[in-house]
Image (cartoon, rainbow, N blue to C red):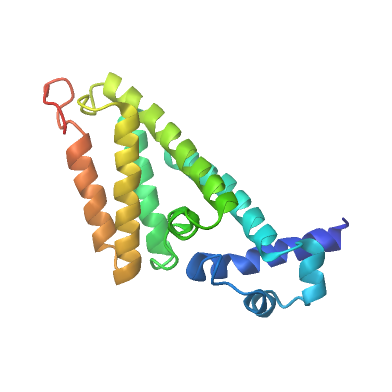
Length: 204
């Protein structure tokens, strides 16, 4: 495929992004895609044999970007600072989007888990890798004495993801940062030990 073809393929993926994020994969029609991308039906099918092929490629690329986003957010001198930095970055990201669209992977999990195995499998892999990255940081923070050790790092990582997804969903619904911000502040209170080394309480 030449430069022009690659450019057209990228344009189709970029223009389809908003539709997939806001309407979902199932509710987005071929006509929606043609209108959003401005390409002919022949051109669309040349680059992607079907709507699912386009959707899966977009999801694959989005998952790669999301892993980079996580790594970018996990920055700091200590593991606790890295986790806190990621929480701040997540809020900043959705605030910057006006809380429109929510989390692509949370949306896709709800939409496709029972009806579209290929989408569900790719989404499950994203959540598993997200959990793995967070669990590694949380384990280090527990070793540093900055996070309660009453639960395993894997359990706490799963908890962080669940709370974030719930906050994102509510902020998307109400179009305000308050729900997501409240969820993040509660996570901080429940996870972090105020004075590391002096608190031996178990979290529940």
